[in-house]
Length: 469
Ligand SMILES: Cc1cc2nc3c(=O)[nH]c(=O)nc-3n(C[C@H](O)[C@H](O)[C@H](O)COP(=O)(O)OP(=O)(O)OC[C@H]3O[C@@H](n4cnc5c(N)ncnc54)[C@H](O)[C@@H]3O)c2cc1C
Image (cartoon, rainbow, N blue to C red):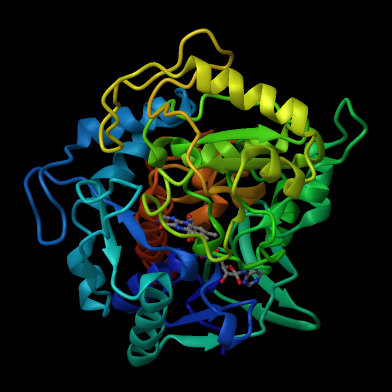
């Protein structure tokens, strides 16, 4: 089959593109690198979508206006974002859910817990796995052809025009193509090259774990960048979370995240604290801790809490190391008890009395200790004590292909007429660095839908709409 539109990838962005292209009347072939049982990429691990709304809506409380969403993005990216593409994403997040529902996605209110997301994020009933299953069902029903175990290994491009995709010896032609094959987070050699060697002679990326799919190896991203496609972002920038050091190398997913950082302290292998654990609400900070741990010796750290914190955070899949005293905890972790106790004693002595409230930026801070803990600083003094060893967990990388509001891939500043990009492969246009929970799916949904529409229009001879970036 030589379709009008070829979609490469099998996660949220690819499925949104395939569904939109098919709805616009194009014949569509979707190539997913993974076998059927592992289909859906990182999208299968997700839970929610960040949505703007001006008034309460079904599962969303209160209001989350465009301007507030934009200011949140501006803050976390430190300005490394395209305002035009960010605002497009934000606006699209306000009106995509009816379309999602039509394709079988169900929403539910947020669970209570550490992430304070009921106002800003719509949760998928059954999580991302149910979402991608619903999209696959809908795509099959609409006649989208789907092939699994179909990792495209190269593209044929002539002067910015897509000609064909190669699967081994097989050449697949199409009028237009949507690239939605994820970032390069599962390519450990590329991560190693990007992160290099540090001053201690370590190769930090060797100790990274990959939270999601093993299939996002960046093969096509690398090839396109070498072929002159315009790049966006920096290869070391990624969404990186501190996860349980016992997590598997791939696909540990959400349950390996350790969410008690803001309720205790975090020390490195030398028993030293290295960052303000209570700087801001956890959803606004969880994605910086992977990078912080990556900078520590051995890329290891330990989240330490006492009995007062137990039950106040999403329980991790593996139980913590438990001890009846802090020195015993240090010994169980293999840390030097003297240095560990000096850090814990200094911290405990610095905690100021205040009114502890984990739902607001409370007045429980430290005084006279570096780094300070600015909120939720309570003494760690009540047995039993618990510790979780942390490693950097890469969620997805930000180096990608530059695009504009039409989602076209650019070559030398010029948009391709028939090659489009969506999802992680272009998320760096909106996320130069940093993260705020739920925006990955907002970007993939917005640009997947645009890419599918543009690819169909271009294939059916109506010409893609190019806007200036
Ligand atoms: C554990 C975890 C939890 C997350 N939770 C959330 C959340 O709650 N909310 C949120 O907004 N974001 C979340 N994210 C981020 C989110 O998953 C991504 O931003 C989003 O899913 C990206 O969608 P995508 O379609 O671009 O990539 P993916 O869903 O990763 O899809 C990429 C697809 O491309 C395929 N592929 C790769 N290479 C090739 C090739 N050469 N040929 C053919 N196919 C190929 C892969 O098999 C895969 O199917 C989470 C990520 C992880 C890992």
